[in-house]
Image 1 (spheres, rainbow over the protein chains, first blue to last red):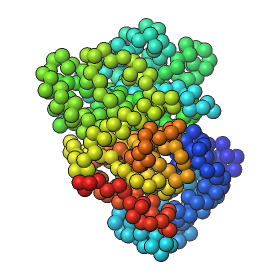
Image 2 (tube, helix red, strand yellow; image 1 turned 60 degrees about the horizontal axis):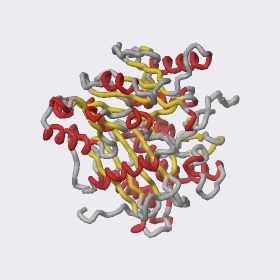
Image 3 (cartoon, rainbow over the protein chains, first blue to last red; image 1 turned 180 degrees about the vertical axis):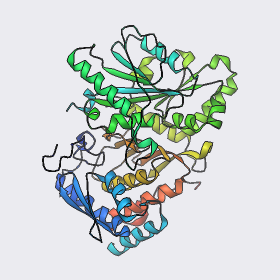
Image 4 (cartoon, rainbow over the protein chains, first blue to last red; image 1 turned 60 degrees about the vertical axis):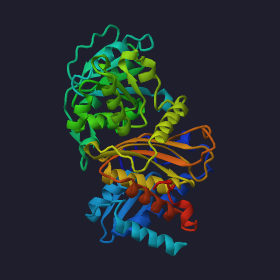
Length: 111
Length: 352
C-alpha cells in the first residue's frame, strides 16, 4: 500500500509491460517511467478530443485534468476512461466517427 | 506474491437450468486427478462430496460505482474465497489446489471471473481457470433462441460440454453444435456422453503457461473455420469474427484502444482472444478477455508457423466487425504517424 495516498497495490494492469514480464520479457528493454511517458503522450492525443489531459504522478499513477481545473487521480488506463467520462460528461467511445476523424487528422499532421 | 502459475485456479461450471451441471461436476470430482478440490455452489446443489469441500454462496452482489452488472465484485464470493483461503492457511481444512464454482442456471459467469481477477486480495492467491459451459442437447437450441443468459454463457466459455445427446437425433445435435461454434469459435466442444474427462475440462487449462501454445492453436483453428467476414450468427445480436493485421501492432496504442473499448462497450464485447504481433517483440503476445475482464497477457515462445499476422477473435453483441477493425487501425496509425498508412491498415479479406 502506498503510505502517501493509501492506495492498495494490485497485481498491475494488463497493459503495463513492466507488470507482465512473462509476456514482454523478450521485448526491447524499457523503463517503467519511459513506458508510462509514452503511454501518457498517446493518451493525451485522444483526451484532447474531450478537453482533458493526463500527466504522470508516480509510477503506476496519473493525474487527469480538465480545462476547468478539475483533477482526478487514476491508477491505470481502465480508470482513465471511466474518470474521463465523468469529468467531461461525454461518452469516450473509440468507435465514434468524430473521434476517429480527429485522430486521423492528428496522424496526418504528425506525419 | 505467488507467481502466476502458483496461484490456485478457480474454475466456473455454468449452464442453463437443468442442463446437467451437477451431474457433470459429480463425474469430474470422481477423477483421481482432482483429489484436492474445494467446491462452491450458489444454490444448494446436492453434489455428493466425499473428500471434497463444500461451501455455499448466497446471492449478494455488491455493485461497484459506475459499474455495469458484469462489472460487479460478488461480495458473497469474495468473502467465501477469503474464508476458504484463511481456513486453508490455518490448516483448518485440507490444502485444496483448485476451486470449482457451480453457478445457478440463470447466473452470469462474468462477475465471478471479475471478482477473481480484480479483487485486490484474491488476485494474489487465486487465478481464473477454464469457464465450462454445459448445454443441454434437448433444450439447448430453444434456450439460445429464447434466453440471452444462455447465449452469454456459451459465448464466454473456454470449454463447452453438450449433455443429453442420447435423447436427441444426431442432426439436432449437429445444429446445436453449429450454433455454438458460431457463437464461440474458440472453445472446443465436447459431448458428455463421450465420458469427457476432467483433464480436458479442468486440468487442460486455457490459462496454463505450459498449455497456452495448444490453446492458441485451437483458437486459430476455430478462426480459420469461420474466416468469412460476412458470416455472423445473430442470436440476440451476437456475432463472432476474426480480425487480422498484417503488420505488427503498437502495444501502447492497443492497450489504450482496448481499455477505451471495454470501458464504453464492455457489456457488448463478450469475448476477445488473440495472438498479436507486437512492435519490438519476436514472439507473439496472447490476450484473453471476457467483457471488462482482461487476463494478464502472456507470450508464446515462438510463432506456431510462418504466418506473422495478428489475429484477434471477437464475440460481440450489436457491434460490427468494420467498426472495430477501422477503429483499431486508426489508433495504431496514431502511434505510428510516420508509417505508411496502408501498412497499418487491417488485413483485407479477399471477399470483403
